[in-house]
Amino acid sequence: MNIGRIFSPDNIVARVLSCICDGVWLTILWFVCSIPVVTIGASTKAVYAVTLKMVKGQEGIITKQFFEAFKESFWQSTAAWAIIVISGLVCSINIYFFYNQDSEFAKMMMLVQLVAAFIILSMFTYIFPAIAKFSNSLKNLFIISFVLAVRNLGWTLLMNTITVCFIVAGVYIMAPLLIISAGGIALLNSIMLAKIFDKYIVENDMQQV
Image (cartoon, rainbow, N blue to C red; front, side):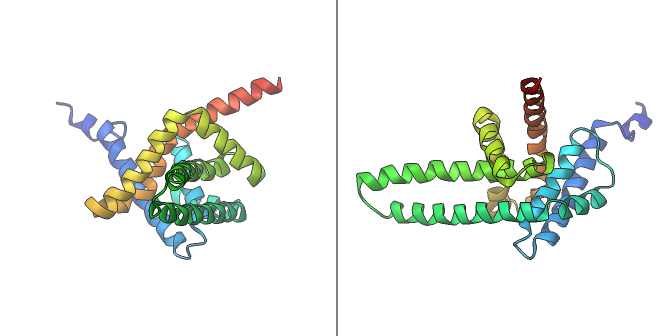
């Protein structure tokens, strides 16, 4: 057995452990910078700015990149977070209201609200990585996020599932998962988002030729 290979930086075990450590540290940075609550959008965008580079092997000093990304597009990320939160609250109130009604109309509206909840979750999944990746108006970034979510519905379902499972498992089943939640979710989602964004960029370039 080649002992040197086991401890080689290129060893798969070493890479996995490195990703876990990076995920934990990104989660800590995310949590600390999200304490004011209104900064959750900027923190989430910053995490994705780092993980989108990590999946391509382009990351540098993680802490430095995180805080640079946190400051960049801060107000745009904060506005996006406010829109997501308000939309989510309205949707949650509607779901609670129609769930307690016994009529065909209420059942139909419940279905509408569940679809709306899926769209809001999808926007949460795409909008902050989009802000990290593209320079555009917030309106256009939401449009881009919605189009990409619909066009890549399979990946969207998988990323939404990853997000929900991490949170539910961390809260109700395995609390230690919470220490890697933000970084872990972003890193796993970024594997798919990087491919989706690259495809979008190529298609956009082709349309402009």
